[in-house]
Image 1: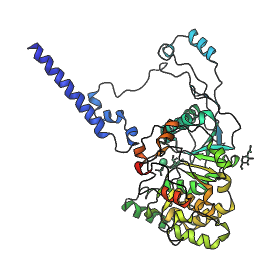
Image 2: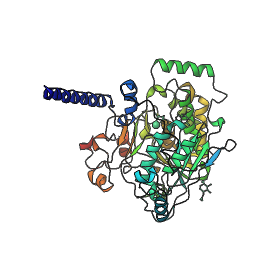
Image 3: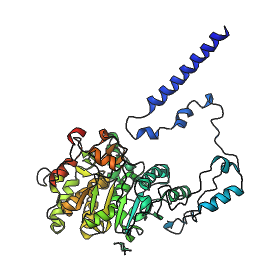
Image 4: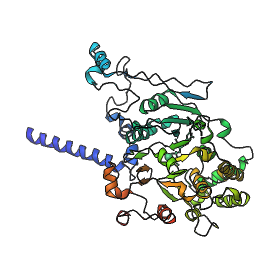
Length: 453
Ligand SMILES: Nc1nc2c(ncn2[C@@H]2O[C@H](COP(=O)(O)OP(=O)(O)O)[C@@H](O)[C@H]2O)c(=O)[nH]1
Ligand SMILES: *[C@@H]1O[C@H](CO)[C@@H](O)[C@H](O)[C@H]1NC(C)=O
Ligand SMILES: [Mg+2]
């Protein structure tokens, strides 16, 4: 009798385990990125009463404190920009001595030696040679801290631990202490924090607020993504016309834009900024696709009136062929996906680009429609740069929900220690515009592309 009860208990346990596994796997998302956002704590929340003690996560005072904490300065109210200070570098020997001298829970459970935050040890290799006048740039909210942390770690592991380029963070609000200390700890270069001038983040006075509000309501009803969002529009306008003019950005010639929750799948063991400069490139991309038409119905009309008004800004040998299938009459909606960009800031600050941005801005489409910075940057690059000045970084493997660029060709992927699945590569998908870029530039399609589409 006792034996069969035990069996019953085993069966009950096995059944419970299966139920838990089923729930976890059923609720992890379809896209490659969604699995990450699933939190076990959210799963448990609904069933909190079943898990005694799960409601209290507070750490008793004096315990669990991280004595490796950074002393990054909290935002100073009066100053628009902040520069976080790196903590003093600790020599390994003094760390060990300190560990031996005190005996706390930290020492017995966490023997991992303290690291200098100016190196991402054990990847402390430094690339030789001079650095470019360049920075990473991220626009983010305080609430983006953990998502941007994932991106930073990947950028550091795959590239920047060897180059230590600066990282500029921009925000329409003041960055908080957590954001500053966490991002400063993760980066190998200098970090700088800037507040956006309210004149660059808001409605210009020529915008009819009522008309703009009606559009948002209408787009909401039509379920257009971000259609009812005011802040998303400010963001798109800021990325289109202002980030490169922020006082911190004025100090640099090159930028690499990084968004929260991206992934880099391959080592980048050379300097893309230097590559851009040496090869006379001004703008670059890794993913291209067709824009959602409902967000930009009159963007091309505005572009055409700009071309008429400023023929002097239109480059000879441009990429019109990438943007239009009828010689410029209509837009085919192809654009470079601007959540990744390595580009030249002096070009964005040029009269040509500023004239273009101001022309679009006056037409009001950032608010009366929902123009994205991706088609704006892409059309500008496509018309005002020579086509050779736009670079496709095949060897920078990248993910931003929901698309992946995984380099075509196994040799390249193995050489660069890539961890992306080639089946996820979007380049040769029918919704990608990358093939057009290859055709326009008469670059032969990479070997084996047919097998990877
Ligand atoms: N400071 C700030 N950053 C924002 C805001 N909205 C978006 N961002 C940032 O702008 C970038 C694009 O926003 P995201 O939500 O990723 O848009 P998506 O990639 O088009 O879905 C990201 O770097 C965000 O962190 C905002 O209201 N304030
Ligand atoms: C970096 O570039 C900016 C913008 O072009 C320029 O003002 C600055 O002087 C440059 N700095 C260095 C060290 O070359
Ligand atoms: Mg994003």
